[in-house]
Length: 261
Image 1 (cartoon, helix red, strand yellow):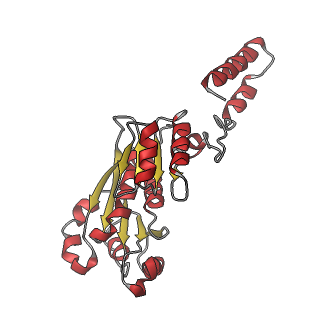
Image 2 (cartoon, rainbow, N blue to C red):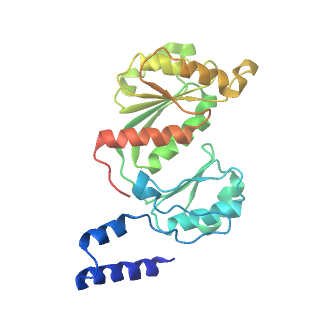
């Protein structure tokens, strides 16, 4: 189905209402039903109704996908959306996407690819607090996710609890945010410390950074899930995207009424 098919179906629906063969309520329900995908790719079925239902278009997870597949999915999403986000992308994915979408941007540290309108609105404020420099790839993934969804983002880098004065020096600025992402590996203590200092929701993101007994982030995950501080929610290890998406849902509803894409 292409855009011309959609217009023809809408015109037919309106003609039925005008002719009296279809009620206004029936037409409303027809328009509310999920629209069919613009086209089934050989290897993917695109959920074009995702933005209406959830507030943001379907996101492409590139890991495990061939570069050409990721590029084709991105093109298909952009057929009905003004933006697209691809996560866990490597340089080969970026090259394939940019060959078909020349103005797509590759964020190498975040491992994300984005294509968005040139002037996105920025509402509210989300603070991303990164414990160490090694945690920045996950922090940047969260920042890219938040930015393309229309959030104002401020990143506080290398302020982990091993030097608590660094965090306390930034705490007044962090408190201005509507929601806070605490991204940490090693022992994963920072979310508990932050939650004891702020009156905003804290989304804890364990990272896989650490020596052997960190078990690839499992130690930090368990520490965060067992936090004694109230107001902490935890996402999966290295899941900057998931944390950013959740923070966006909280922030945009706090900042102003949600606006459909």
